[in-house]
Amino acid sequence: MTEFSCGGFVVGLISVHTMADGLGAAQFINAVGDYARGLDRPRVSPVWAREAIPSPPKLPPGPPPELKMFQLRHVTADLSLDSINKAKSAYFAATGHRCSTFDVAIAKTWQARTRALRLPEPTSRVNLCFFANTRHLMAGAAAWPAPAGGGNGGNGFYGNCFYPVSVVAESGAVEAADVAGVVGMIREAKARLPADFARWAVADFREDPYELSFTYDSLFVSDWTRLGFLEADYGWGPPSHVIPFAYYPFMAAAIIGAPPVPKTGARIMTQCVEDDHLPAFKEEIKAFDK
Image 1 (cartoon, rainbow, N blue to C red):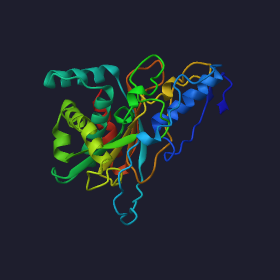
Image 2 (tube, rainbow, N blue to C red):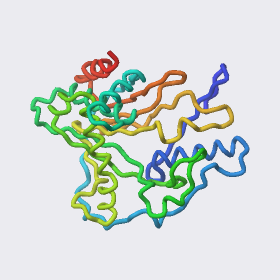
Image 3 (cartoon, rainbow, N blue to C red):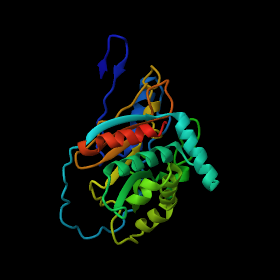
Image 4 (cartoon, rainbow, N blue to C red):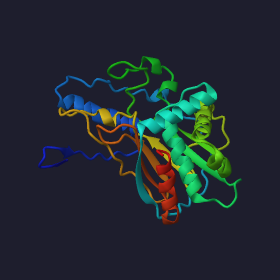
């Protein structure tokens, strides 16, 4: 922990993904905050429940992956609440369905990056991958503890419980669509999650969805707004800002978070393009708020 002369302080956390996913890590630090504030027990009791996690037979191992190292640059941009709400309204007008801030933020980031890459062929495939919590899909999860203040069961499991959701499209389609159109691609993939996860759980797959391919035409996204990091309270109230340091040079990544209070909207924290594509990516992101 680093304390500043103004009275503020910074807490750093290192979490190993083989032990816990983002939601599990956030539940842990919230439990630490509960004890720090004098509670007798965490508001969300831990659940062991390892027997509920599917363990389908593994495919024969292939050769070790070849990880190409990229010179990826950091870019952080804020999407205004007004622009996000306009995109939500456009999607509702086009489909009659609602979408989330995450849907809009990830759609704009993926589209901005795809346009910035300027792939020579509009039929080139671009890939998007994000990691969905599957606690609610576990057997018996309805009886697991709910978070403080209500909500669905399936919480309290502090380990790994996620499924990689993939979207594959032609670059020309992603570039030419409006934001609502890209949101539609993402929501179609999200709708497939229960069926895809159920098939994986019974080993009904030819390619392991957890064997990821880290190529430059792939973008990996993580949503930090609902994990619980923003609610951690050690006795001084929740944090004013949470930022990631979990970037890897072989993985083009974007993390969706919240801007520092009292600002509203979404903060996109990325390391997903190299120098050649950096100016165009920044301009595409800025254009969302115009």
